[in-house]
Image 1 (tube, rainbow, N blue to C red):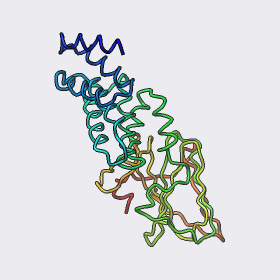
Image 2 (tube, one colour):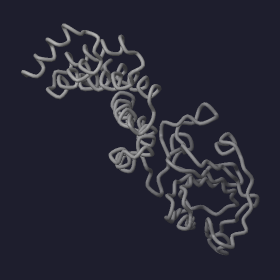
Image 3 (cartoon, one colour):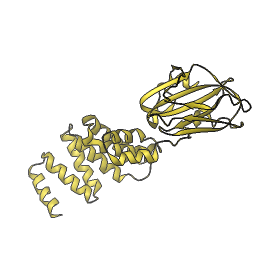
Image 4 (cartoon, rainbow, N blue to C red):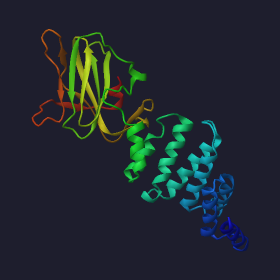
Amino acid sequence: KKGIKYIDKYIVKYPNEYEVLLYRGIQLFNNEKYYEAEIDFETLTKNYPNEWEAYFWLARSQMEQAFGKYSPKYKSAIQNFTTSLKLESSSVNSKSYFFRGECKDISLGQGRGCSDYVDACELGLIDACERYNNQCYPQTGFMPYEKYFGKGISSGTNKLTFDNSKCSIDKLILIVNQNKIKVRCQFVREGELLIMDNVPNGIYEVKVYSGSSWVFDELMDDGITRGGFKSNQVIERFKRTFEVNDIFNTFTGIDFCAEFGDLKSDDISINDFMK
C-alpha cells in the first residue's frame, strides 16, 4: 500500500509516465481493485494507443469485473484483447488469445473460444493446449455435424472400421447411401480407429474431411456450416462406391495412410461435402 501511495505522488507530478501508470494499474489489479485498475489502463490506452500491454491489462480488469454471461464487460474485454493482438500477436502476448477464448466461452457459449486456445497453444502456452484437449478436441466417434445431418441411421448389423492409426491428421468421415441419405458422419482422431456399428446394407459413397485443430466456432466457406479444421484441410470423395452387405461381407472399412493403399479420390468443396 505504501508503494502505491508513493506511485500516486509520482503520477501527480508526472501524469504521462507510461511505465509508472502501468505498474500502478497492475498492482491495483493484483490487489483485486479491478475498477480502479481499469481506470488506469483506460487512461493508458487513450494516451498510448499503440501499447499492446495496456489493452491486455484493460481487458483483464474488465474480465474480472464481469458477472454472468450477459455482462457487457465480457464484450469490452473481447474487443480490447483483440486490439492488443492486432498490436502484438507473438508469443509474448499469447495470454490475450487464451483469455479472449475464456470470455467467448462464457459469454457466447461453450466451444466458441476453441480457435483462440489453438492459437495460444501454437505460441507455446501450455494451459491453452490443455484447455483445447480437454474442452475442444473431439473424441473418436463424436458427431460434430449432428445438428446438420442428424444422428444418422443405425438399423443395420454391419460394422465398418476406418483405420486412422497410421495418419498424423484427424478425419471426419461421412458415408452416404444411394438414396443420398447421410447414414453416418463421425470424427476419428489421428492415430486411432473408428468403428461404425449397426450400418445398414447398401451402396455407399465415402467423403472424408481431414485436417488439424478442430474448432467448433470455425465458420466454413459456405457461410453456413460452423465447425471445422483450422489447418491442413483436405476434403475429398472416393471415386468408387462401396457395397455393404451383411451376407457377402463385401466392404468392411478403409485403412487410411496405408503404405500400399490404392484408393483414389477427388478433391471437393465443403459445399459438396455437406450435400
